[in-house]
Image 1 (cartoon, rainbow, N blue to C red):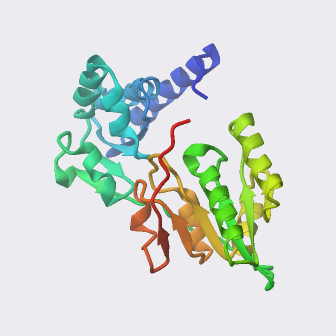
Image 2: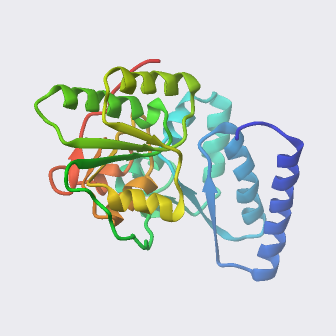
Length: 267
């Protein structure tokens, strides 16, 4: 991802052409276009916006994250001018939570900023929970921005306290070999009750959720409305998380989980 290739260009062009002819044939009343939070990604998405505008369709853009303003503010003045002017080609924007409406304040009027949280229907399997300890689950990409180091340090502190009878299952893909080495050394050195599993999908993922007692996901950096939060709620788990994006609109502190301060750490 994020790498240039002729294959990607060809695929993008084929999708643009397909969209153009689909609009001409189907004549939709509304076109919804997901947008990226990077310069290259937005420029690619801009072609979809221009196609919809040239075919005189109403359009809504859909932001699936919450880092849009950070990216835009860090961009060049030229990029900012292009983005802000072309965003106005659309009739409105969909965001994942009320907390994210402010990302487009000044670009769209309040009545044209729509909130549509993530959601889905899930078939949660039966659990095989053990009764001798508390099963804590962390399920996400294993990288500092998602809070994996912070969760392991919390387990280290928990083990050093008077508490006992708990275990942590970590499920996900490592994004950095050095981070993986540091985290596994921490676990091994301190004999922490932590087990690492590769990324899980489908039934396997939901079995991990069904077998857990507590779900932990503590991102340090901007999130939208994370699917793992939605899935953990569907499994009926109390959730420990941070105030990023629209998380606090689902995880209510002291009601169905706890919101803790995110760790700010330079690497």
